[in-house]
Image (cartoon, rainbow, N blue to C red; front, side):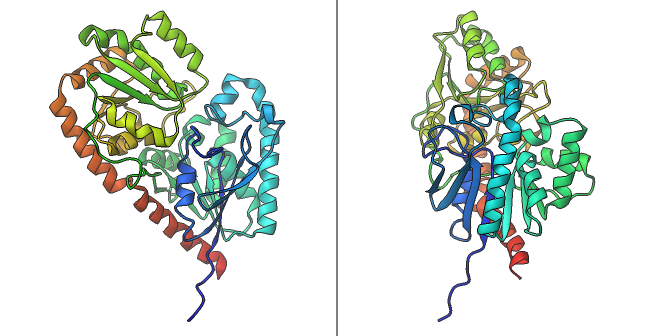
Length: 401
């Protein structure tokens, strides 16, 4: 009987990661990491935040959180994302050098003591750039999720991305629109389209037994590119046609105060409910209850836009009909057969499309069934994680030889 070969050591770098179990922050990086622990020893380096453990093991993943400021000031990346936070609170630019230093020191320590065979950096900037500068000959996979590609403009950001692309052993993006944007910056580069996944084998599965009438659902960070203000602006026109419509809003973020003010100014307090951020385990019952998920994505003033829209895929897995803002990246997910895409910045067009779907239950049912099949075939975590595992293992073998 021969001993099993040692599992490759995989180091993951991410600025977005759950701070604790049941966190409301996006958890897709952890969802991928925990599905790789049967084939890799996985360590994650991510920023610390108030209430989070400095080091812990979550679902077999060793998580190391680096400090970059006094605890009360460690607010650079959560509740909206780094780009949104620094643009809304310019003083937070002062945290960026300390963030880079803290992450760089943590990375250096793990490289020296743990010696990973492969590194997976999520986002070009700053994780991909730091890794490109520091990991030496260790194979590097960089995955871009959108904001680092669409939202960071200018020659310096483009030059840093090109450096990352040329240094990386492999590059992945989560949508075809992102692949096209990468090719515009670096013609000829090999960028794989490898989206994050949906837990179709666990949390998210088809169930229409709880479906309400005239309940709209929004799920996402309360930031400009998610387009919630356009949906709220469309609500008076929607109510003219269907008086009983309500909108449930799940999410938190820096735009909450101005959205509250918009609801009050339009007299919509009885029709719009802010439910706050919810853990992943709490989302399925809302997807299964809603008449329609509305994700009114738009391009933000700084150019940032959605990279894919995983909440849309989650809703589709639960057979919730979807209507989305027609930004380029969602076209992989939502076609004429699986949902409705509209110009969400036009409140009249948005309202008309919503009312049309609310008045046509047979069309909603048809779209929901086709959408569910599409997600099960293309976005289930089982297949997504296997594709990432194969790529990472092939890169690790280069280092292990």
